[in-house]
Length: 437
Ligand SMILES: Nc1ncnc2c1ncn2[C@@H]1O[C@H](COP(=O)(O)OP(=O)(O)O)[C@@H](O)[C@H]1O
Ligand SMILES: N[C@@H](CC(=O)OP(=O)(O)O)C(=O)O
Image 1 (cartoon, rainbow, N blue to C red):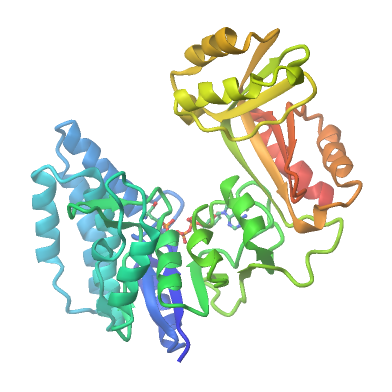
Image 2: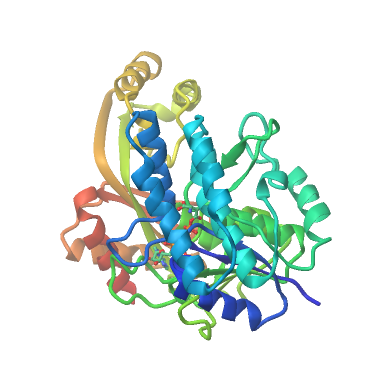
């Protein structure tokens, strides 16, 4: 029998009704043998994700504020789900243990991971699948980076012995046994790791949209959906903010060539989006695959006459970034100009020091800083080597009166990135989308 791995996001497990849909999906295909749940997500727009409530608990504990009311809200969400599903599972011992760990100074990662842990216990009970705790099979190293190879070995050892299992998403274990979480949205990575280990034929990622859309539906109304996309295109889009999949998701499945299928729990008959290593035929010339963007960047534009004849200039600039532990997002350059694009998160509190060091070491003629920048990536294999794509993009922005502060195009030509003022972000995405579609 072939193996399928199914990851269900928080939106797919937000309440008992969603759990029932998940059970129907799993029961309808016996090949769906390994299931990865996230913690319960929002039931409606004004609701709060369990993961966010757990972060709140941790913060309340840190500030010595009473966390019991928040804990009760969390506990009641699970108890209500169990009651409405008619399960005989007794969750009280689990809840009591977690509460005690919180009182005894449980770490942030431990506390926050309990959303997935408890959901795994409930889902395993509902499906009649074995529960596997990922702390024993997802291996983080002492420096807190993931050991992908050892994880693969441990997962194979454990999972291939089990006919069917539920493995909570979002966390693994450190060598000393402590819990370590991935960054937000990281259950997608758990699903990809499991898919690789069990050599799945497909990694199904179930969410609340019928596949990847050409752009964020909260910015453009009713964007077209994407039927097929390559890992490369997806990586560009998810890195630049298409939040439907965590940007690291593709790495475990990339080499193994396991396709990812984004599906909708609320519309299980829709085929969703297939993410594959190579699209055949590639998207037609002159078309784009998708648009994504992120806010909160700062651009430092540097000018120096005969910059290119100073052979050590770039090394000095990059060394400054390295010494300050800041990684570079983009580096568009001209003959005597170069711009470094950095996230505000990375730059936090370091801007003055950085500018000072650039002045000292690189001796530029001019440095200008552009804060509050948003970057927008327009992505697609169909863009490569096709004349007129950039013209169309820039015309669309010009027609809306949007000022472009920066342009960057990778050598693969599947991606054009423009930098605009943060306040123009949504308007710019709409302009580009409607310029092409
Ligand atoms: N390009 C895009 N295509 C589809 N959804 C997108 C895109 N960009 C952002 N999204 C958002 O991603 C959401 C799904 O991701 P997420 O909320 O993390 O779901 P889950 O809890 O199922 O993991 C969608 O509801 C949508 O609002
Ligand atoms: N619950 C975690 C991990 C996750 O992946 O969630 P989701 O699948 O709902 O995006 C988070 O909110 O970050």
